[in-house]
Image (cartoon, rainbow, N blue to C red; front, side, top):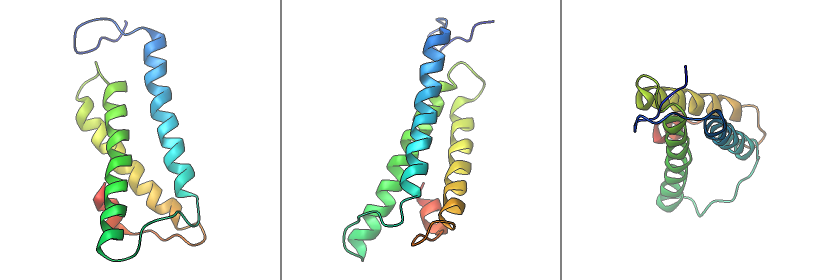
Length: 112
């Protein structure tokens, strides 16, 4: 059975593979950036907090959208993409505990 998108059209295997490749590629980029010990950021204080929260919201927002598109045609793609994105963000915070110079911060997980 071929999956269908919201418009009712069939999704070809190539389109489906491209959607999932985008998801995996974005997750790999997040993992790579998370493994960097010292990413540049603006000054501390309110500006730094806004930049950090905004960048987390953007990177995980993109992941949620990519997942929702890849899951289009399945049951509850938005709910599933939200849950998977939140769990990936949680695993990213855990991953940062192993990176010198980085710390896991529950506030950044909440920003996603």
